[in-house]
Structure formats: C-alpha cells, structure tokens
Length: 147
Image 1 (tube, rainbow, N blue to C red):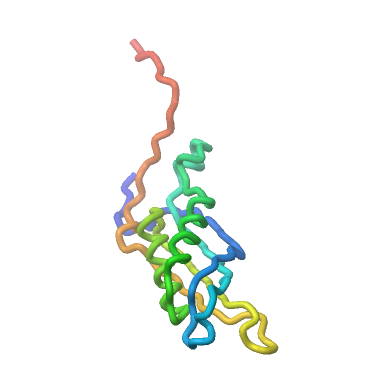
Image 2 (cartoon, rainbow, N blue to C red):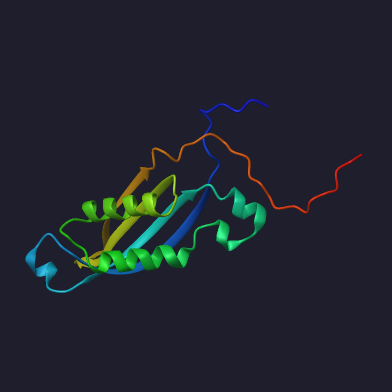
C-alpha cells in the first residue's frame, strides 16, 4: 500500500469545556484593578492512535496537565485584548502539547448589561504536525521464530 505524504494525520479531538481561568485582562483601566475569570472551551487535535491502541494514559495528553499549565501561565500574564490572549493560549498548546490543531474560545462573562458573555474564537494549526501517516507499534508478546 502506497501512502501519499499529502494525506492528513488521523486525529482525535480532545475537549476541555467551561474551564475557568483567572488572569489580568482589559482594554480599559477599570478592568485591570483585579484579575478577571475567563471561561475557555478548547479543542485539541492530536494523533492519539497509540493511546487508542494501548489504552495507556502515558500515550496521550493529560487534561489536568494542560489545564494546570494554562492556569499557571495566565496567572502571571496581562493582556488588553482577548484576541491577543487567545493567540497566546493557542501557541502554547500547539507547541507544548504536541497538537496539530487547536481551537480556543475565550469569553468574559457578564461584563455588558443584558449580555451573558462576549468573547473570541480562533483556530490555529501547527505547520509541522501535518506529517504523513505512520504505523503505530503495539507491544505484543514475542513469538518463537518458525522453522
């Protein structure tokens, strides 16, 4: 079977929903007097064929590690715009967590009268993760050679 290098890597989409993160953000001075809690929805596309085959957590991404990294990183950050903050989050996930694609939705809750939330949604791709299909080796017991 001849696989073309143009074929996309099969992916699994990992989902993180309604993730609360506290950070310093705001375009106006009155918004920057205290941290703001933002809500994130994040989709992370990864090649998780090994994890699917082995059923081992060490072969996939750990949701808790991603969330903790995001919270720790943004606690020390200050941004004026959600547009910039969403780019920072997408870049970090793409480069630190072996993702080939990430979608980030970030919202501020209750900042405008009569509006539940306002926010930004972006989708970014890792240019080097779109590699050709590769076989996944599964640990199997060795068999005696045939005579």
